Length: 130
Figure 1: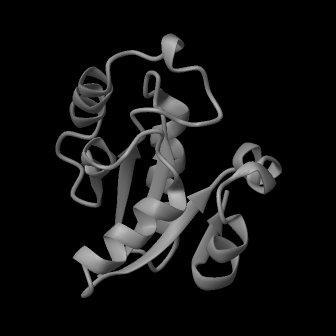
Figure 2 (figure 1 turned 180 degrees about the vertical axis):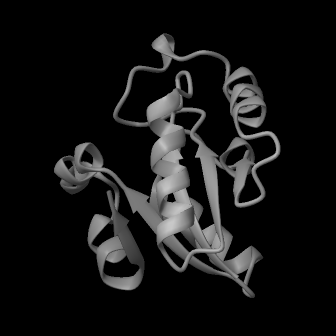
Figure 3 (figure 1 turned 45 degrees about the vertical axis):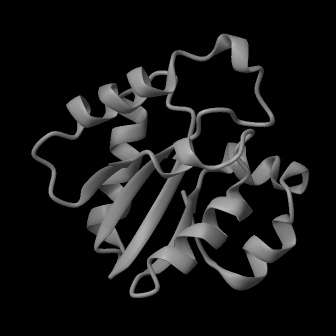
């Protein structure tokens, strides 16, 4: 299955996030879009974030009934802060049957040089720019 990973704090999720996820799910060859809730983004102060379980719950409420959208807590059990490259490595090892792409907005792309091992993400993965 082709899965788009939409990483973010989603603090909180809002209609803009949902529009982007639905657009990607319905206008690309991706079969699902996973909202990957980041408990602690290394580029944001953690004190300003709602509890990660609350953010995950809000996503689940927002996407209820949407077959192509999924809320993921995969980063909750990984070391903090959450680095995209570490999550991608873990997912590729755990779900070998899936093909993953990263969904990235212009705000993330502008900051990508600050990401851990960003070159590997751009080189080895499909990126869906929005």
